[in-house]
Length: 210
Image 1 (cartoon, helix red, strand yellow):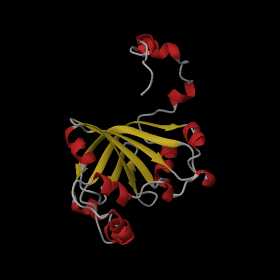
Image 2: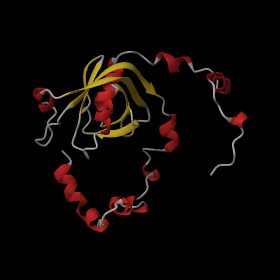
Image 3: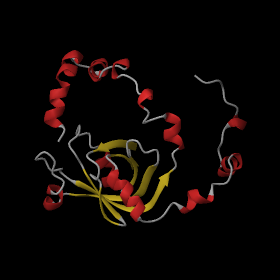
């Protein structure tokens, strides 16, 4: 628990917020455009990882998506395609998009400290030929997320430099954290063998990754 916060220490208006910070740098404003430029396209096509943010009646969702670089396909300066690969079938992102088409994408490239964002709107498409064009290991996605870009801009490197995200000596051993099986066993309301789950996970991943 944090100490009691005085009302005078809470920001509740835009005026209070903007008085606290300096004006935005000019270059941070003109790097935002309404389309995918050639430079921004190059960034997207090198990225193997994107975070997808959506909104729905139940609240917000943020979901990681990854595949070989270029898996997010740039069709033209306003359109990108994202294959919906096999997952846990919660379908949080897809549920949200059917009820609220707004979407935000954050692209990362290993070793690169800048990130790229796309804000826009999306629809879900099941065209057989389009889905087949995204086939990996003999498996096509059940649908493709078609995103129409409205705002596109890149973020400077400060956050990733501060976090040292790509530094090898900043990495920690997975063994320092609870295993997936341990977490599931602690949360499950029915008998669950966490050790057996962990032992079989590598083979399970091979069979279900696509």
